[in-house]
Length: 401
Image (cartoon, rainbow, N blue to C red):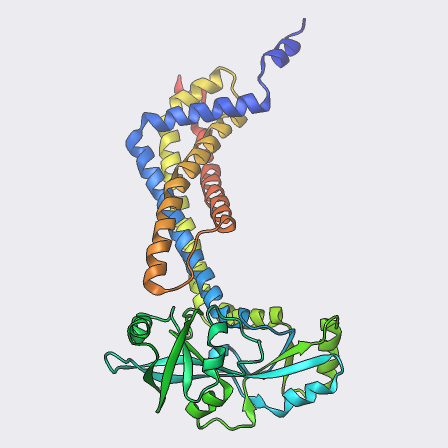
């Protein structure tokens, strides 16, 4: 029997060879426990940093689009110069009635958005708050807790307060539970808080109140009756949304945009992602975390290879290929990725709860984000391993013995 056949029989398969390489990598890492702990800490630091940056970025977009996501409409009208909901450009109210010329349109509902000052009922300090004015019978907004308050919001000078607003607005929920509806100053007008809803703060507004369109005009007296901020369009059952959108775009003048809810949400998200530096800052922070982690892992793997050059040279002299030695280095990178990701995931989940409670932002751990971060950490460690493998060139049996 030829030597080639014997070698083929004796050589392990790819899976067995990989497993053997990973076991050898683990033993090398475990032999230097202090160095292993430093590497795991570095990977965990990068993991936590990436988790926090991506979490803040997602919270930014989720909070910025929470108001839009709670609206119930098939199509929406908005002024082309509106950049975000908290700084809208008013459009002519007549556009809402022109839409009714299409037979597939069942109803149009104007929505008013503005910011006014809120006087803290406990301390008397003032703070800007977001106002959402809408016909309470139209059913185009669906905030948790709003439905039981619809009849009370029809009364003059009444409003619903967002209980997820920042605490700087005062203990509104506690005061409402202790004394029932009470008055607070919004703008220059006394308004009665009749109930609580849930929307949540965003980077554009620290708090929200919802009131009828009539009460909105009482608070924002400088707003002309002919100006509105958004129009929600309800189509008749069975109507083609995209076809109706195309017909409205052809019908209406260029001083108004016709958007689906998905497009309206994307427009709001685009402001924070492209127009402001916040989205770039979070993305850049994630990249820096990966770079720092990669440098740490590279240094650890490079030092490990340098400290075991004689062993690697011995393996080469015994007939092990460069590919097998590369498997050992990449196995060590995989071990560090997993060992650093697990504690990083746990720490990040705890930080999400703490920071979410402190900032009232929607920070929560989910499977897609955890998977994304693990793949990023794994790639980071893999690249560091590939860079460190260059040191294997020095493992020459002829030089070592």
